Length: 245
Length: 279
Image (cartoon, rainbow over all chains, first blue to last red):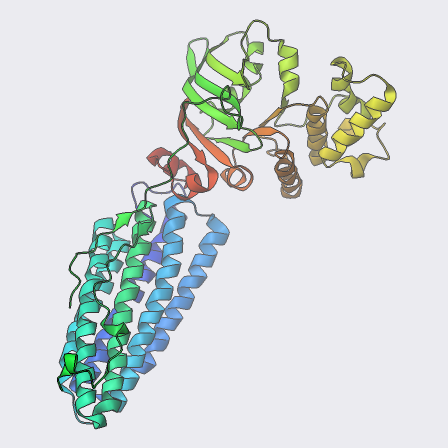
């Protein structure tokens, strides 16, 4: 949907513009939900958490509206080439953003539970993860709106940092749980929150691939090195090699 | 903890275009080949050095804005431009291994092997039967009436018209509906055992249902023939063809697999035309 030349049918241009605007609004809203959800955890604000949960409905409604617009464009305009790629990308991106919203909602729900027990130090990594994923969402949506494939690649590369933060938190929480079994419940909730943020990063990466294809017409092949297998390692608390005798 | 290597996206390489250097002469899957074809009408340079292959058992669509040369180019494949006094065709066109401009080529025979269907259905002012029987008769393809009956029936069947006209073969072809007339013209082209069928906007005078029937027929016919279709409807090109060629101002701008051309055209001009940003 690059705007090198305008369509002979001006109303078609307007429909494509409206679609881009809606994707951009969804991106902004999903990003804000992620930030608010993590704020609920760090500030221990349960009322805010309830507002985040309720606000998710708005994102669902935006997705439905976007789907309606995409159906209309496909039925009436028969888009091809970059128009087609852009319209399909909008549809797929909205699905991914709706999922991002669900993750934010899930974090907010867990915040209401976590706020009832004493705070855990490891919570500190979450705002960092949230900030990272939030910027990824913002940048990848900008890349879509501005048809900037370089920016999409940049976002795609940044997912590693989120994964690294997640792995670091994972190890830390495991240690807490082994030290103090009473922390298993809150730590598990925190771990799910972190996993949610890690998934948000994955969705931003997927969106980057969609945006890249939409702009260039070329599929970006994933050759991400899998450098860390922390999440897949089984731990034996009696292993003297790892944890001492 | 962090991965040691920075990940790098590798854009998947687009599928390599089939070599354009081989022709119908050395590739069995290629039915006709045009090499550096130029057409002049008097001082007008209508086709400017077009090189492309037409594959066997495929529908090739030629698209482009009015006056881009697509119909002129189509007419090169069976030397229809010979009938225009001011036209001059340069370059080589092969049908299998044969140069269609070679002196030994009989143009009437060539046009039986490379048949043509026009924009407006143009049945002869004769019966349905005689419309189809005319070609086989003049080309001496049949020995007796029984043979001829069989050719007429199979041709009408292949053109998807038999069931609608089998009980009234003696009525004038011109009394049929537009869509039926066009299928009659296709039956007439098929009756002389062509190898290639050229179609110049075969559906532009038909309603959507008659158009759908012709499109279905084209899909069916390509199992036996190479088909080249000129069409103003990009949706039609997208629906019926395996390969699409985009012409602009006498140049072949882009030629490729239809799905790829309509999803990720390689040329800016193609993109602007098919997305409706042209002009």
